[in-house]
Image 1 (cartoon, rainbow, N blue to C red):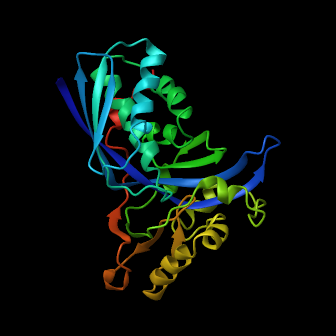
Image 2 (image 1 turned 90 degrees about the vertical axis):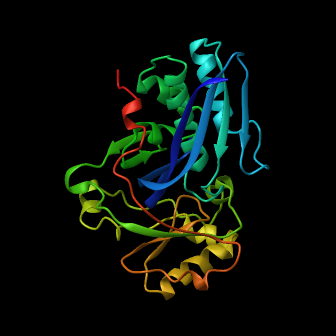
Length: 284
């Protein structure tokens, strides 16, 4: 093996998430702000002498055909590349948390292999490959905090007054996870939140809106309610990210982790203004 890359794959938070409607094909129309975090997985990639894609990890129970492998295989298929790679995934971001860990892994894999295999694909081409892997993958390939609309395909970088101020966050993730389909198929989900604007969001970055999925998610996973209540008891404004089950709060003082139940993920981290691999993707 030779030519080793070691790259980060950052998590994201949904600062808010509104469901504004539903298309005739069943897909939900959303508005959200995606924010990059300095909490990340790490991915080591080595070019190999065969065309095979192999993977190892630090967990031991991840599927061998995870999004990293699927991203590598999709890149091979799109380009006709006959090079291979061994991928080692150091997993830190919890699964089924609403933090985009798998999508971020796929995006960093695409960016790294595009360099490792010297394919020189521009960002739009990588995005087309990434979108087939997951709706959040193009956001991580764009590499900037963004206003996201439609079914996730309309991505607008947040700049100027809308740019997210630097802040610290505490994140709680109960052991239970949630599948997105169970939430979006629920009869209890409200799907008619009024359309918001970036200007309105910029007036109160971290207090704006709500997560419309949270009431349904809390029905399906009561620990989400417990996590929010724990944060609120310390004076923080708590909110679920994505489709859960992680709950977060912006913090201005120390967080007392002694009240968190055993077995939960607890992480204090900050936001990022750009993806660590932003310069690796070229627009043309």
